[in-house]
Length: 301
Image (cartoon, rainbow, N blue to C red; front, side, top):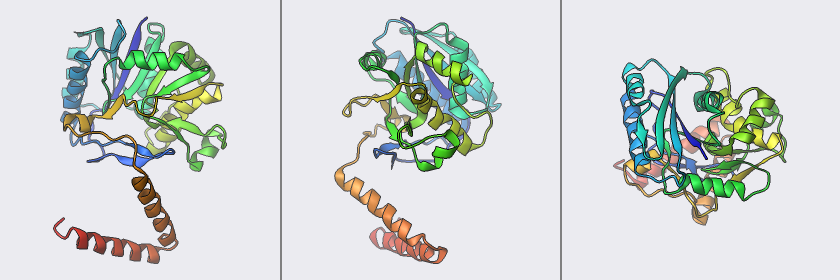
């Protein structure tokens, strides 16, 4: 059995998030932390990805690492990827590819599958800042995937109900409005070919508009499995295979699920915000009160 882990990357600075945030339905710490202040930070991140891969047994005898770069013209990064392409690592080799920076990570997933779909039996898709590097991470995923009837996509972070804002553009309803965070997960080549046949691609937006890339990529790609009659499957709740890179690099303990108190506080804050955001005047008042309260609690911050 031949399998491929696809890592999407882009040599640009990213939105600063020092800690993961609660998002999704069900609610979890899926808004992953990331601290990438420069293109060179991304080079270091990829090196870290590879270092973990070298010392992690994926549980499969033949696993290649395909790194797809959404090219923004950063020469140092492009040269680095060129230098490591073909490098042998335990259980396989590194393959690097450059493509136009279109469709974000989800365009990169399509590119990798389109190019290598006849060489591998399973594909595992992830971004460079969410690391899947625990012992037997591939074997565990394939075993879980094959244990479910009609499994189409195994979410390595978690599945989520889709917000109603996506219903109209993606032709969704309450029954089929399900996706997976980051479109991070595993599927078989056999089923991916069915998605490809229906859509002519692995779903992604052929442009650079951020929100449309999310809609027609991150949301649409996992959801496409449901639309062709399969299911999105989750890992057992206590099993964590994907961890934010920043947490690993800074040795922070990653917490995937919130406590009941954290869930209550999240929805309490959201409800209060909705009440005060009825008008710009009440929202401004609320934000001033909130700011004053924070200063009273932590005046030196």
